[in-house]
Amino acid sequence: MALEILSVLLPLGAVLCFGWGSWQCARRTLFPRFRPRGQETGGTGRAALLCLLVGAGVQGAFVLWCLCRYPGTPLLQALQQQFYGNTDARHYIDLALYGYGSGELFPEQYLMIVFFPLFPWLLRLLNPFGWLDWGILALAVQPPLFAAAGAGLFALVRDRFGKATAWRTLALLLVSPASVFFWSPMTESLFLALSVWYVFCLERDRWGGAALLGMLAGLTRAPGGLLLGLAVLYLVQRCRGGRRPPWFAWGAALAPALGLGGYFALNQWVYGRWDQYAVYQKEHWDQGMGLFTETIRYHLRYLFSWWDSDRTAAVWVCLTAVVCILLAFALLAAAARRLPASWLGYGLAYLAVTMGATWLLSAPRYAVALFSLPAALALLMQGHPRLTRCTWAVLLGFNLAYTGAYLTHSAIY
Image 1: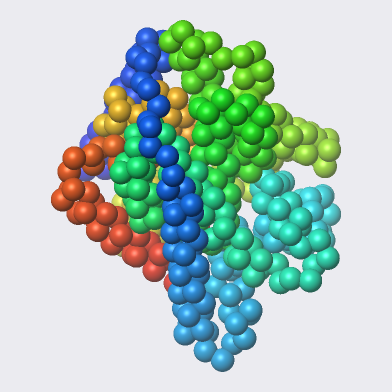
Image 2: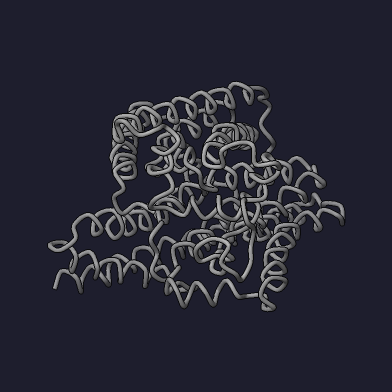
């Protein structure tokens, strides 16, 4: 009975949050109120340095953990066992080494088209002769990438809401429950950096930079294409507010779709079918487009059925997915009147697409790269210093628990 009730109430709550946020986004896009850009400047360098130092510190802790967990094992081998055994990170290394193809230069090479190309291409660019260890390189690039992401997020929020809110946003991002992926050999730092700087350039009328960054974001992860929607909302709002952008601004808006189109072209070139990635996702992982309401329902079913037989998966896959989806939509809904309409619309679309994937395993990892979430939470914390400190402490606690589960190879993907 409890399962049936929760299967109705929780998806309904998520739908109501989504509906409220969508209404606010549409209303404020079509009937905008002019908001002058903030007058504060500076701080971006310090934000980047903070993120770089935190990233280096966390990775230093990673090294110590590997030495303790695998005593007597050479460090490189210990790092390989720790970070390339149970996540998708090893696939990016294989792609950097061998590229895409339908053969078997490495195990399941033909399936690796499901991974977007920019991160492997970046590794190949930085290591053209293969002189560096690929696993170490994939880890070493993460702190600089996260520094770029943190600096971009800081600058973006500062321009809209001032330095105090920007620092609060950055502090909340650092302790996000799944922030461990920012310093792991994955694509979260790269995608966040490209997306925030894309929006920054868009709002600063730097159309050429926005076009380049948007195209690269579309080559990094599937949600990169959703930045097209963010740009369209922003430009429509400008037009409705009487600040018509130049015609070539629409080219910058289309750039994320161009990057996504490049990924489709890669599919066509390797396999002769532009959507071959979708075929493999469905055949091998039972993944495809779905509704986030159904994601909540099936994770609830697995949560109840696995609680006695496989509690680790029940907690770290199912429970975290349900909580993540509900809190993310609730957060955007609560901040719907404070967030810029384009950020809000992008956040809603991002969550609807990523959290609607069938057989979703990585809800917290997908959510951590959505810049609208820490910005929304920071705006809600304005004027409440005690609540801010309590929220930060609670998030840090969940962050440590999630990181511990990740480092012990629990069901964290």
